[in-house]
Amino acid sequence: MNQPTPFPGDVTTGRRGSRAALSGAAAKRVERPAPLRQAVYEALIDLIVNRTLQPGQHLVEVELAEYLGVSRQPVREALQRLQTEGWVDLRPAQGAFVHMPTEEEADQLLSVRAVLETHSARLAAERAEEADVDHLWELQARGQAAVEANDVDGMVAANAALHAFITKLSGNTVLAEMIGMVDRRVRWYYTPIAGRRGADSWIEHADLIRAISAKDVDRAGTIMTQHTDRTRQAYHDRPRGDRA
Image 1 (cartoon, rainbow, N blue to C red):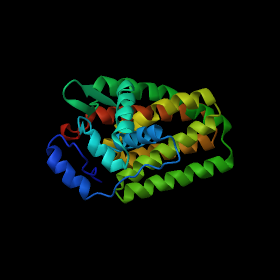
Image 2 (tube, rainbow, N blue to C red):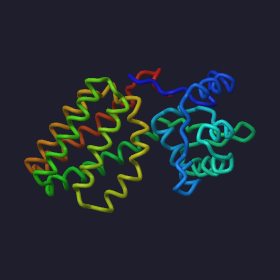
Image 3 (cartoon, rainbow, N blue to C red):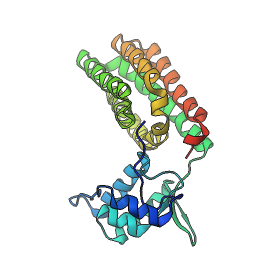
């Protein structure tokens, strides 16, 4: 399984070790065309979601600013925004830390995701055309290739792409917006269990695609409910060492 890249402010090595790790890593420069504060915010969320920044990790403004190639001000603004959205905890006299999600938080989010995506799968089964099903199989092949290569990042990306396309096929913009609101956090929870779910997850995806292809609305909904519930259970059953 791919291991997260060491990053500044690591809670175990301290600032000296984190600076050494940072100096050996390729800088992730923020693209300038977007408003800077938004670009910094998006970059930090990506680093949290892919767990380059681990839950509980200390976030040092000056090191983040250096890593992203910006001043400290947009980093400070981004951290404040991330704190209001639950991605970061700001502790008086201690600084900013990546939020450590509780089991209850994960359960609530993944339960909501199951309801939304079950409805999405049912609508997709009603609307999908032959070309849409072909594209689902292409995404399926991408995910299976990632499993065979033990490419965790590839598994997470392919999983997100397949679920996103099913959401698009639903044709329901309100539903798509609601799923979009939880998508990043779902990927955050999914990353540490992607390798463990591995082949089973993609067998379930294949069954789902067959149901959508057959326009079997009820079966598509049932498979998606079971699929999302197994992911939720896998998160709760993960080994204690993966709970950061």
